[in-house]
Length: 108
Image (tube, rainbow, N blue to C red; front, top):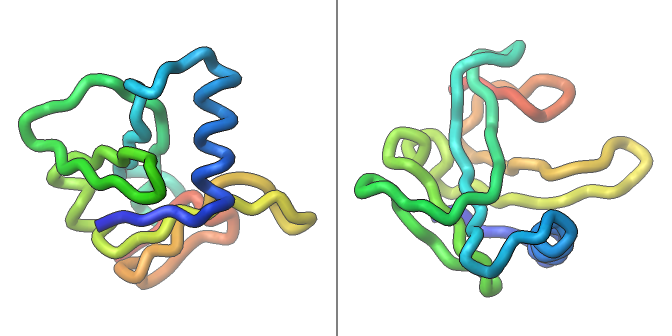
């Protein structure tokens, strides 16, 4: 399961509206190879599902994750920070053994 904080939910709704997306556009969270720690998070709007997608809903937001990425993301909390130390989505991932300084890549 992947969950989101209230701040992340509010930012997702704001971005979806700003980009002219409808409520049919869900958040897709995935993991790709790359980054300074070996794996990178990818976050985007998507309205198409695949047969291997797992769909979670938290705070009224649907979150789609492909089966392979779910192995790395189970239990992750998606947060949003707009503080002085950085602005953007943050992944609080209990599976990550190491995270890079920018928080965009990790290793297990």
